[in-house]
Structures are given as C-alpha cells and as structure tokens.
Image 1: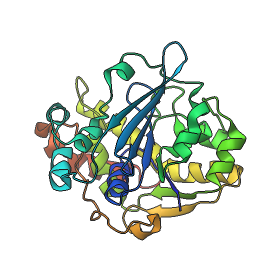
Image 2: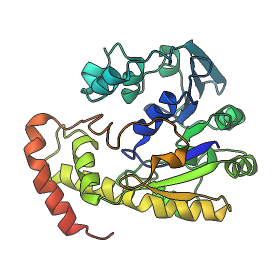
Image 3: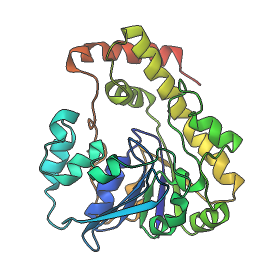
Image 4: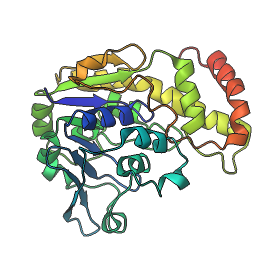
Length: 291
C-alpha cells in the first residue's frame, strides 16, 4: 500500500525516509530550502531524481545514479547528527540529505513558488512514500506563525491553497493511498527538539529566541488537527499516528530503525547555549500547557 506522511518540520520525516530506503522502497520529498522541488529516491533502479520549475517557468529534471544497496547506514546515521558545516563534506550521500543537497543547476535556477510543478505530480504519486503530501493538495506553508502568509494551520483550516494544482486529480490519487497524520504525545520532548534545532540564535536575545521557538512549537501542535479538517473537507481517508507510541508496522516496513534513532539531526543551537534549554522547556510547559 502506498503511503503519504503528513507531518511538520522535526516530525520524524528523516526517520521515515531512511526507513523507506532501508526497505528498498521509493520515496519523494516535495520540499526544499530555496523553493519547492521534488526529490525522488528510488532504490528500485538506483536513482535520485530532481524535478523543479525554473525561472523561465519550464519544468526541469535531473537524474543521478545512486547505490542504495550498499549504504553504510551506521555511519550515515552518525554523520546525520553532525552540524551543517561538517555535513557538507560527509562521504555518505544520504547523510547530506539532512541539509538538502541538490545539483547546482537547480540551486541556481529555480522559482520559489512554482505554479506548473503539478503537471508532473504523477511522478510523485508513483512513489511508495510521499513526504510533504500537503503540497500535492496545494497547501504550501511553514510552521512559522511570525512570518505573514505562511501560517500553515490557518491555510489548512481556511482552505487557502497557494499553489496551482489539479485538485480533483490530487484528491483522487490521495484516496488510493494510506494517509498518515503524525502527531506527538510528549510535548516536552517535542520542545527539546525545537529549542535545539528550530533555528539559529544569531543576533537574537535569549528572550527573542525563546519567543520565536515557542511560536513555532505552538504552530506545530496545531498542525495535526488542522490537517484532519483539510482531509475531511475532501473526504480523503486517514489514520492518526503517534511519534512516541505508534507502531511503525503501519507503514508496512519489514525492517525499521529504532524509535528516536534519528534524534539529534540538524541541531542548530550552538553548544554554549545548551545549558539554557531545560529552563526554556520548563517555561514553555508552564506557559503553553494547552494551546
């Protein structure tokens, strides 16, 4: 059964992607750091493909040969937890995916918010697993309520679809898949991950950093319910699944990583600030017990 993984940032996507590939199944990630593009990882034919819309509004495609059958997963996981500067030089190509490695021709010529990418959604729906499937329904946003126009929970609740798509086609394809909405029971554990990897402090004060990350956590906590509303709107069936308690067999994997195996990837907060995290978590839990 083909599966769609509806989750937020820091919501187990890397664990899910690695698990899919360990099981020899294809996966597409429809997301990027400089604009929307699709990356298809396919162990079945040992390829990694990229699809994007360039600055001239043309759909572009690059295909690379990659060996999945001899990936050193132990050291891939080890490297995945290094800081971004070190990750760039990792010899393990899947470890570099933590920072979204991409071909230069994509990086240098991509439109940030494509309106024609939907024309090759059939390539994405062919994959066994889809990460960021909300984009295939036209929803594009981030869990950053401090940035105007990018509040994903409101977009889902109010049916604000920023992308041009063939909605009927996408709905029909989603109904043929097992759709999983991911949520987190352990809010304290969630908060820790966000304070460690939800952003750089840079020139922020402790107070401004705390407020910024707290807003992001609150937005993430709203996502599962908002996504339910969106899928109910289109009569798309789904299952709820807990990152802390859920059985990974729901995804049909024969082999899987241990729970929390990818915890610690993409830690952005510099180590000399780590002694502040427990205090931030305590404060967050007292201020935002419910949202």
